[in-house]
Image 1 (cartoon, rainbow, N blue to C red):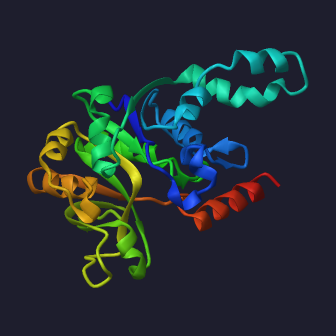
Image 2: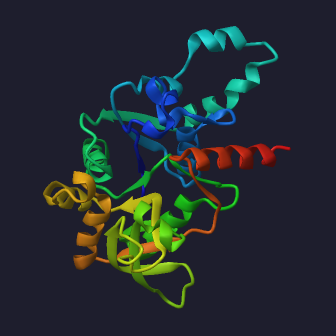
Length: 274
C-alpha cells in the first residue's frame, strides 16, 4: 500500500561546514555508509522500493552514489576488494530512484510539496536522513506501515525528549489508543514551542507516512516559524478533519543533523562491529 518513500535532501548542512561546502550532508558517512543510504535501506526493509529524492544545487553526489560506477567496478572486479561494492550494489538493484530539485529552501513542508510530481495521488513515506534509526533494534518505518494499514491515515513518529529541547522539534498532544503504550491519536501539534508552550514532551522525528491530501494543505498553508512552510502546521490542519496517528518509537535514534549526534552515531556503530 505504501510504494514510495520521499527523502528531502536539499538542505545546506550549515552545521557541518566546511565539510558540506562540496559534500551533501546526506552523504556524510557513519563509518563507511552515507546517512542517506541508511534511510534507503530502512525503506527497503519496510517493503518500499521506489525512492523519490528532493535535491538541490551541489547534490550530484547523491545521484552518483545510487548509480553504477563502471570504472570503479572494472578496477575492483576479480580483486580482493570487490566485496566492498556488494552492499551498495544490492541497494541499487533493489530500488528505483527518481529526483527533483527544490530551488528554494522554504522549509520541510515546501520540500515535501516539491516532491509531489514524484509521488502522485497516493500515500507515501518520508524519511529525513538526519534522523538515523538503528533498524537492527527496530525498523521504525516498517512499524509505521503496519499502523497505516490498520488505521488508513497519516502517521508520524514521535520520541520522548527533555522539556528543554521542545524548541528543537514539532511537539504533539494526543490520547493513547486502545490501551496502547505507544500509539496516540493526535489532538494538537506545535512547531518548536518554548518549554512553557509545549503540550507534552512527545517530539516528532524524521519519519512520516502521509496521505496525498497533505499536498493541497501545503499549497494553501501560510509560512510559520522562520518564514518556512512547516509540515507540522499542515498536519495540525489535517488532524482537524481526519485522524492523524503518532507512533512512539522504541529504537535508538541519533540526531545526525548535529555534530554531537553524528559523533554519537559513529561511536555507536563502531562499537557494534567490535
